[in-house]
Image (cartoon, rainbow, N blue to C red; front, side):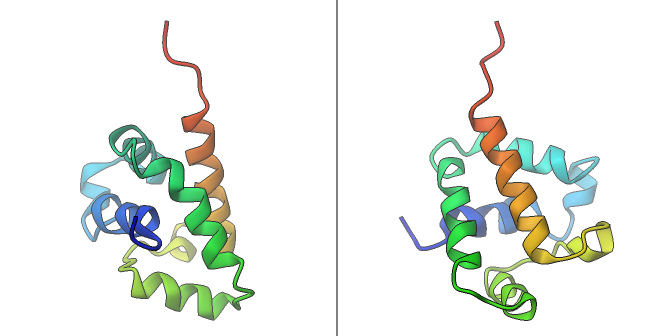
Length: 103
């Protein structure tokens, strides 16, 4: 699997420049990613940990995400840092992956 492929897929295919026309909020886009990408979603947390585990500053994290094609702006949506946003999205993906299937 390509390095950081799950993170790049979420950013490019789900949080693209027109994502707000497709989803009412960030979490719906993340839910769609988790449900629609069963091969990639389980790798999302590892991608986030790889980005954050490099001991990067907030500016370096932002630059790494730019290289992956981010157009979503977490700070404009109420997040205080890209780091906090990535951790919250990773936790949400994990929660979705471990939820019980509907009966």
